[in-house]
Length: 271
Length: 126
Image (tube, rainbow over all chains, first blue to last red; front, side, top):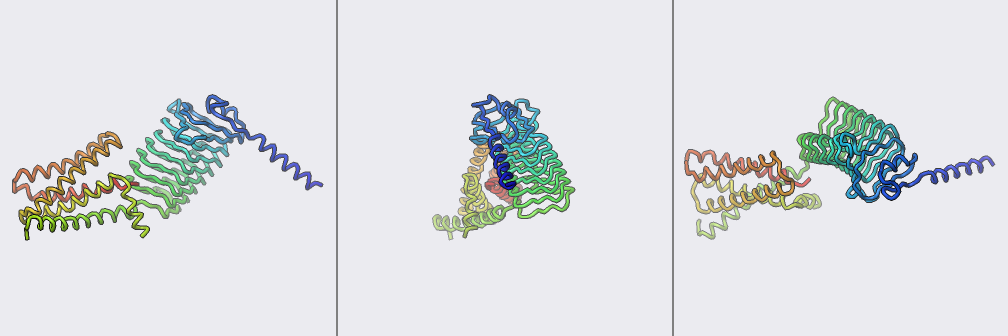
């Protein structure tokens, strides 16, 4: 009997849990995204339809913020330029997915003192920082594009045990990825090309795993400074094509010369 | 085989194809230029001129493409103009017919090869 009772209680709590989580639609039900965030309870999902939203979003509770049509059609442009376009602070279990966050003199997406959250499939470009994590742990930053930012594409400061995977941080005007005073993070399969300075920088950061990243045509590929016990392997900084192609082309140039010479000799009757 | 196919995949943009042609022609032109120092053969002169001017045309097209797609910028403009100056300086020295200046031509030819190597490097798609 107690087993049946406990099973009943478990099922009831699960059903109640399902019932509590609600979907809030923007702009159908709420004019602005921030209004929907304010109205949402923990565990709710705010679904944002296409449009350009000039707001500074602030999230301080566990919820999911998702763009229905993806970052091409759902743009958050910072209303107050000095603030991040999307700020998540002092909470856990937040999901930010499918947005374009632009036009901030701070950063596109900022996580401050946040744990167990997910930032995925976003585009954070044309800010000062693309995606920034401060004092945040055990978060997952995956499949984002943080390009053409004034300083860094993805920036970690005093943030530990995070997973940074499959992101693009290209053509930033300083560094692609900057890991600063952050330990035990996994930085995997990211692309940091064509940045003005370093592709990937580790600064006073220990025990990180830096594997299978690609950093091409930056001033410096991967820079490690004042850091120890990091695993750095399988990264591509100079692929074979950059060496083989010029050699092959010069060889073809010599062959071309010989062909041209013999053809013209025949044409002009020169021996 | 797969590796070769993967490497051929690098020719996915018009600009890398053009830059590659440029390096091939510049190499051929450079060799014929060195031969011209030894003897004034009409064959070498034809190869040198044709390849040289074709390479210059490709360079100008690449510059236009760069400005078209990437926009104007002071450093970009400076870089392309510097490369163009190497071309023009070489043509100027050749046309001047001053034997004293000719000894610098092989250096300029070498510089042009370096310019083309850089052209290939910056145009490999990443």
